[in-house]
Length: 198
Length: 406
Image 1 (cartoon, chains in turn orange, cyan):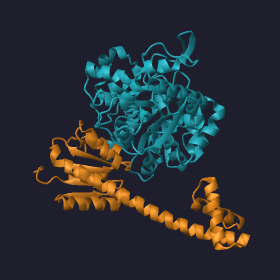
Image 2 (cartoon, chains in turn green, red):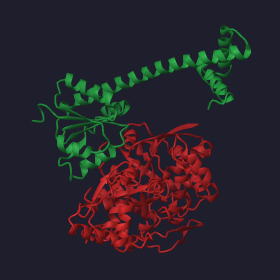
Image 3 (cartoon, chains in turn purple, brown):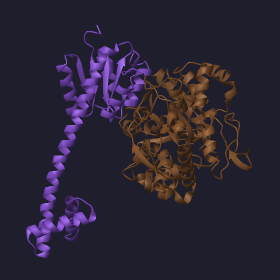
Image 4 (cartoon, helix red, strand yellow):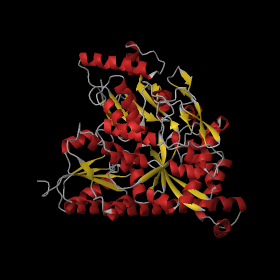
């Protein structure tokens, strides 16, 4: 019964990432996939679903709780061990690098569940890449806005042109070995303080 | 400069690592000590197993658990140094505190008195068909779990049958207490003081009363790292001993609390870090007391990794059916604590080091001067609250004597 379609529980407080993993598992033919995001009630959830495989993100503070549940058989009857084989160091490394960990019911065949971990690792990595790119775009936009503001401050205070203001920012950034946006931010902060906007 | 990456959990007993970096002790020893905050003990263990961490702030039973194969990830961890003694407490909800007073709890924090009242209350609740009380600890292989269980069992309470013990992240415990998800917990600081300050919890007793001068956190080091980098490890240990001495100086407590309170470390208000560091413990909103032994960073050989401490935790793993009792496991457990490395490192400093690797725990009723080479060292008191002794040479007798709870 286990071998045909293992049930997978994804424990992830990040609902978007959880949805991405769920979609990946569905595409790969795993139909019995459950997601839980809440911090409390994890124990009850595991009792009800009785999953064969549990995937959890490393940022989740409930990992210690989860591991304890596999030990104290009050709520979970079946012994569960870390999914990756103890000899499979590369899998463990890849999982930890990606920020994910997994557990399986003892006795479930490794080759049956390896694709699940591989899927989780690749989706976690893809999600991290996506978040990073989004962050960069956000930073760039915010940086541009702050540079515009700083240019305005300089133009007004020194009575110089926009080009001159930009060159001044760039020169200061280069001499201090900092980013233009950082210099601009300092300037904007200083201006705010002077104007008592805080 | 040799870079060392250390994982830590944001708790007051990570003080030595933070002070070693912030006060420059590590840098002076040629070590660039990078501190990486982690969110679970499982992460600390796993990231050590894959080489992300060279060393880590660890629960004392963790190297023991790893040595006897209880860890789901294979890694051999040594504890060449302890990061202090004590530092935990048992905190309960105000509601439970009032009920215990009805059963004779006198507010003294005496574990025997508190335990007796708790045992009576549990009996009473059973007669009234009320649900089990729920206590939480931070990890199955934690001092908190074993300390709590030891106390309960010694007071005639079966921790597996008479109440429920669950695992929770310590940062969630004060909230879980205030909404009634749990009735009490055993956790490190600042999570007891946090509940007292919030007015939702009351400290019932302290680790320093359950077992005086008892182990809590250790420096965990992968065996491989210790073998490849002995000199660097020695330098790190020396810098942590210096940090320990600095933390023990009462005139540095304010600076230490401010340092640890920063967003990159504990990210807490300094006021809730002060009680454990100063020994001035607020046990409820109206009562506080002086307990200089609450958390000991340097004195009484607080950094020495006693093999008798490792073996006591092993005895408790056997007692609570997490591990089986055999000579091989006992040897592995003892060997996971490494007094030899500590002694080798400390020889480079002018400090007194115990000459034995183990002691009979509970044998020192008062602080006692012992010979340590040509220096004098004060050890203890190291008594268990119930007056029992743990002789590591008679491990099997001890384990057999503990089997029945009542």
